[in-house]
Image (cartoon, rainbow, N blue to C red):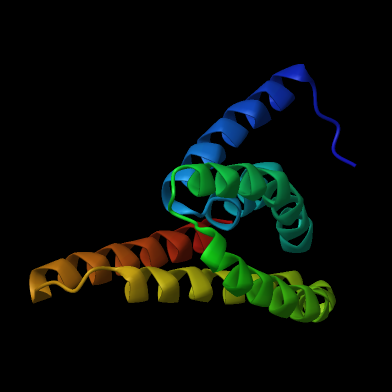
Length: 153
């Protein structure tokens, strides 16, 4: 167990605020903010970070979903769709969680990183070659920085 003091927990409250903002604004947050923060800054395992992120997202997602319902973005006619998604997620999630907990941490980290890049590329609005050039450039710079830090350690 990590030994953390009050300043750390106050920092986690601030992180929670940031992730709550991301969650409410974009419908995301736990995976793209909490997991990297816990792994990179606190050194927890990928599996632990993923579990904490999922536990955090349950109440956060519920509160935000209620707000979306109150504002009319989610309607009662969507409840059947939501129920179908919940059934699929509840059935498949435990199997994937078992697999994630059996994988080597580095393998799971690589899978997570590839997934995040793939989603970013897919969700990015279609643009000209200049826009894609920026994305590819940032990706190469990021990989280069990562390799540079690996060589230094």
